[in-house]
Length: 353
Image (cartoon, rainbow, N blue to C red; front, side, top):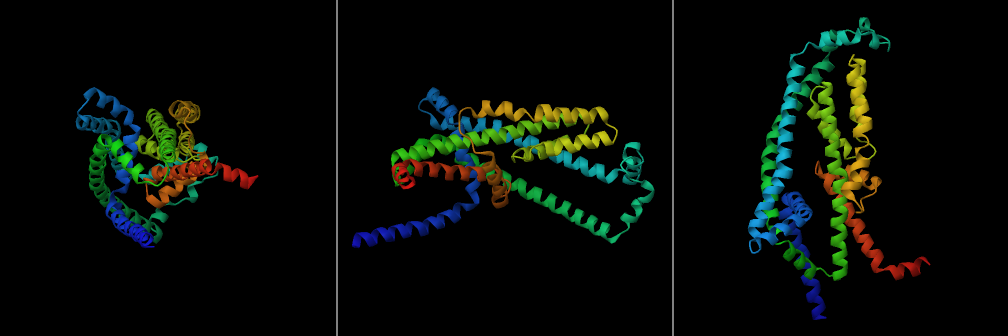
């Protein structure tokens, strides 16, 4: 009885203190989680480097952190800088252009008139003088100011989280096996269950991330290049939008290149519109079928329906990083179900029989 009370008290104490530890670590969970995933993805590289350096795991870990920074973080910084410059260019373009003249020119085109739009019945000045337009302009200005403030806050937060990520990554590379062995000793699961959980979790996570994130970046980049060739304003911003949409199954970059191609055709850019739509359909639209088998291989990835709901739900719950965290949580759940199915195979067969 006394031993039973001790066990209950110890378990309750662990849960209470564990909640305290969770709230302490909660602001840093995302960079820690990302550091863990990155350490597993680059584990093979680290092991090869560590073998060459032999008794200097800290040096091998430091070199791998530099490699990860050059491969992942530096391109992200450069892309962000390019997009910020594009946003500034869009703002200048919107501020300096004669929109009354542009709208008049657009609506007077024969191709537009054939759609039934008559400039004579459209008085742009009337809309400029309405209270609704004034309120919308104020709201847009306030939104712009808040966006600039948020950008500065996000920059400082990004620097802090990047530091935490690489600080964690350094020790995860160096002490990876020691940490895993410690978790396995504490876990009440059987060793074979722990090995299966870890193996499936990493395998499906790699397949999911390779099959979505990498392909989305490739599709967005190719679409950005095609927009640049066609002379579409702010191709970097459109490439970013296409990348985000490519992460969502059943949506994809067609929601970007198709409207842009149609607008180009309507505004007189015949070869540009045809080029964007053909490139989007034949290259960007089929790149998934070409790259996914090579990137994922024989690994099992999530069903597109699960990717869709886990991505949308992850973004709604966790913010922008939810596109990554959502599918990973679903992967963990599916892996646990697989272990359950294996562990209780006989009972399930008997029950269902």
